[in-house]
Amino acid sequence: MNVFIEEMKWRGMLQDVMPGTAEQLNKELTSGYIGFDPTSDSLHIGSLVPILLLVHLQKAGHKPVALVGGATGMVGDPSGKSEERNMLSENILNKNIDGIKKQLAKFLDFESTAANAAVMVNNYDWFKNISFLDFIRDVGKYITVNYMMAKDSVKKRLEGDNGMSFTEFTYQLVQGYDFYWLYKNANCKLQMGGSDQWGNIVTGTELIRKKSGGEAFAFTCPLIKKADGGKFGKSEQGNVWLDAEKTSPYQFYQFWLNATDKDAESWIKIFTFLTKDEIDNIIIEHKKDESKWLLQKTLAKELTIFVHGESEFDKAIETTEKLFAEKNATAESLSEQDLNAINGIVKATIKKEDFEACIDVTTLFADLNIFDSKGNARKMILDGGVSINKEKITDPKMIPINAQLLHGKFLLVQKGKKNFYLIEIE
Image: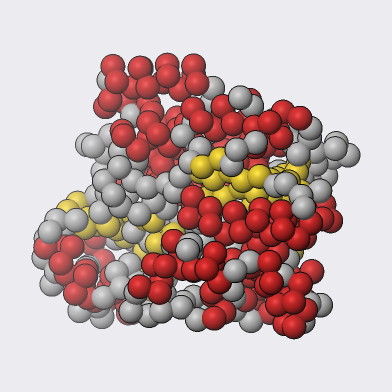
């Protein structure tokens, strides 16, 4: 068995592997690629698994290829989707691709002169000059409709209410051609991805076999899920992004810190580079006193440093200590300097006259987008999930007054367990 495959196996990152893949990796330096979907100018933590696959591949001495789908982003992949995705304009795609390139360069070595230095490609570069007639003549004839219809991603959509457009139906041919092009032009013999991509990846190996008589290989990892069945990667604010402007390092740190014991035990294997012995010891120590959150703290630290760097991790810890000081600590114990220096929480401003004219806290929270509606604000206040200056409020009609202001100008609002907002009155 190959060292890389064995590593992925014990980390829980191995779902399907094509026969011969381990032998290929043992035989020679192998180029392996993963595609990234440019639907945003930032990747989110759902993208961390494919990023880590490429990092592990490079650490094992092989060559990672990151494909950004400038062409396929215009089409939309039906895998794992219940309805057709909106297609993006070329300008938006280019903006998104630039953002993704910058992020991937933080994790992979693109600059060295080593034989296994990472490479980034954009499939728009080879698709832009291919006509429709050329494509169906040179590619379409090698893959039968029966073969394409047999794929789970296609069958599920055809059985659903919305059906599937011809555009999406052809996606597996387009992705398959990516693999073929990289095989022919970059000697790329391995494609990796999530388990929902298995059908598309295998189409690529089939196209390589039929069109050029070559042999290519495939490897997929499981889709990450929460132990309770909830969707991985979502917080109360939505996606957890890798861009610090979209999800602050403090919020990023808090996401991992709030993992359940069961999730943290599996995620620390997947998302960190700690060894098996190190992880086993951390789990043993954690179980001796789970109230210390050793497992979650280690996971959150490793991930925050990996994505944002050590200095941002230090700031996230500083913010956490200020906001979650000992239970008896009051908001008044935070100096004005402390409040101004808090990193990563959402900050909002309101003019003094508007604050003094405020009808009630429900209206204030909705107007400042702390809640998306007055109804949601009212419900959470009644449920005891909202605090002002570390004091729970239970009356949605409470009128905020100047006497509540910290240092005459701040309100520290907590929504739920970990979401803080600092309102400054100008």
